[in-house]
Image (cartoon, rainbow, N blue to C red; front, side):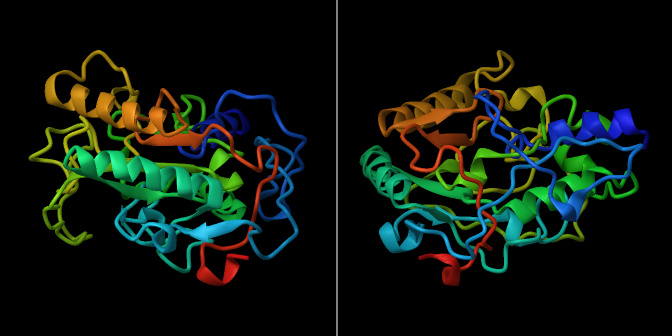
Length: 282
């Protein structure tokens, strides 16, 4: 992949990795992902040097009612393997964001739903892992599910992946809604044929969330929160999630129906590198 293609690709991987519109932080390229002179890529912020996460909590300690399916700790994600920095399948958040999410859960349960998180705090090494993956064009084993209509070389340029990400600041998360009581979710079977994340709910991966029109981490314009092709129940479900989260103090990233940032995040300019593990919580 040429230098221009690599640059284009790195800007996309951010979706949930890509940055939200905001003033750019002062950044330096991490040594773990430094490209050669012919392959420029966007630099990432120097992560916090601390090996613990001050003021962070494990979400299940704050609200055990909130369900979780931490995709980057396992193989069911757009890379197809566990991601660096996720030794434990936990949702870590700043305490302020976690307590706000508990209030959202109260409102969701009152309407017969529960929140379910896919990703919360994401360490900088995970972002570096995404960037490195983006530069390996041969690794496309999950394309048929997560980016069936987009060339891997376009993932950065089209905004599906990027660095840095608000997730590394600890108050951004990816989530959905499930009906309560929740239906069981079949375990991920890597041997099953992949189905596009844009396929109808009954055909794509059997996530137990309510129908949101696409699967999670779907690199397609139909994942944009207000995409006009998403109608009926799926549109109403996206609006419900947005209303619940907005009322709770969170802001949606309009290109991903699942992505929300706590408006009053305590670390707006700090990107952490400690792993997703209970031992990281200070």
